[in-house]
Length: 173
Image (cartoon, rainbow, N blue to C red; front, top):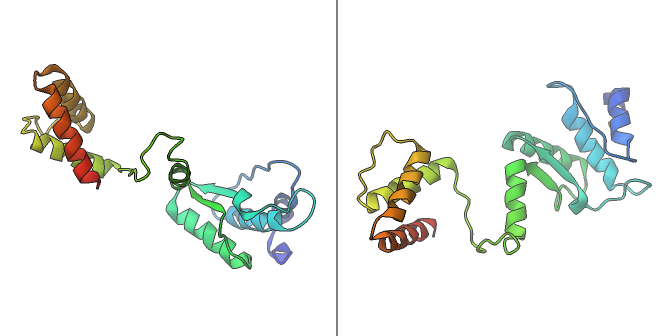
């Protein structure tokens, strides 16, 4: 392995360990990403406990920056790059799974994920479209709760519900 001269014995042991899961705990800058990327390369090589296909590899991180760094290092290590591997953030990989299995999840094929800012903009637009006089001091959660509560108690509930649905559809297209 070309990484042997740059890895300590514990790191090499983690890369070579193939019989069961291997937990790597270490501080910042200690070589965790190097170990993980070399472990991925090792798992793709023929041999006992290895010989995996790229689609059977998952490397999950917390940040987009760390995911891009890991993907870049895997790309640099492997002749065929990281194509087909599951390298990304928890949120990114969950989104990928939902895109693949939208029917099983009961979602429309063209579903959209709204971040918190998009959700707030949507709620404000719905509120404005309904000429609601909800104060701006209400929290995001109470704004939604207030819209739903008002919708459920008024005689014009069906009309408001349709307007909310139409406005939401229009925004999400």
